[in-house]
Length: 131
Image (cartoon, rainbow, N blue to C red; front, side, top):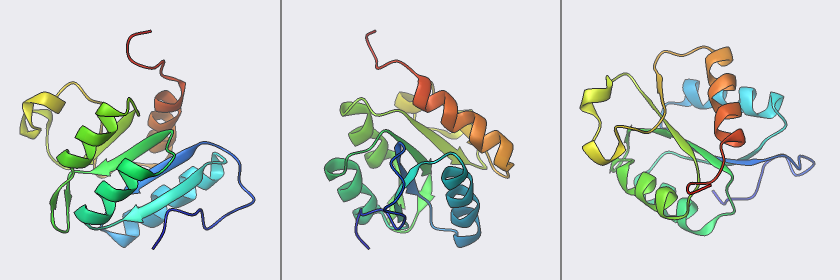
């Protein structure tokens, strides 16, 4: 898989998906396409997710915490360094997150398309850190 959008006609915001459950990927993709977003990934493995987070042009990201190869905290660290907003999607409560990421936005699984849409729009409208 590469970071090229499977929907090249879309010129909207570029959103990275890090998720290893196909049914959830499909829900996320449908919601993002309805928003006019370009989909980066989806990455279902940690190594691919880290590469895409480091090398792709991304406006926001949706990160499942537990993915094949480990967890997505290293991806979150890359995105934070690059000042790219992201949301964690997880069935875990906030206390289960690593302390350095507990203040990050979360979306609790299971989530509805409406909840996802609202969270993604918040990410895309968020000012960069320090502004």
